[in-house]
Structure formats: structure tokens, C-alpha cells
Image (cartoon, rainbow, N blue to C red; front, side, top):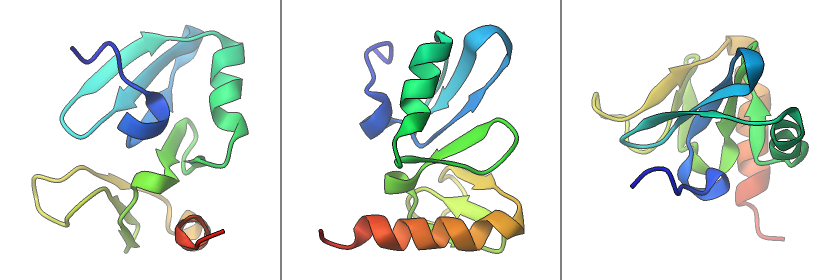
Length: 104
């Protein structure tokens, strides 16, 4: 069921590992999948995913709030997915979110 996901629209964030293993995190699931270096590079070439940690990338379009070093995806409920990021990455992520929400 979750094998056929679209990275750009379904994934909140992902983490890269060794040997091309990528861990995708959606609203209610986590999926590990092997990808070639070219596919990973293609995924990172756009502006949709922002590098927030040594091997972690968030989907800018899915972020709802960033505050006190925490990225929220959806409501700020205890059951909602969230991710801790370094505070020095926080302001640049907020700027990207604002830019992505502005009409072109």
C-alpha cells in the first residue's frame, strides 16, 4: 500500500544512510528504500527539500510551523510528526517556507 508513494507530495522528511538506503517519513508511516546516487541527487536538486542536519532533509511544502528548534508537520499536537533541527537552521527554513507560500 505504501510502496507506491510520491516523494514530492507524500513525504514529510527523509534521512539518507549508507549504501543508498533512504528512510522516508510520511504522516503515518516510515519506509526504507534503496536509491541510486543519481536518484538521490535528483531529489535534492530542487528547492522542495531543505537540508537541516547531517543526513536529514525536510519537505518545505509540508512544514506548517518552525519554532524553538522544532519543525512541525500539521498541528502542534503530541501525536503529530515533528523533527528537531539545529536552531541556526531555523531562520533560513522559515524564510524558505515564506517564499514557497507566496504566489508567483
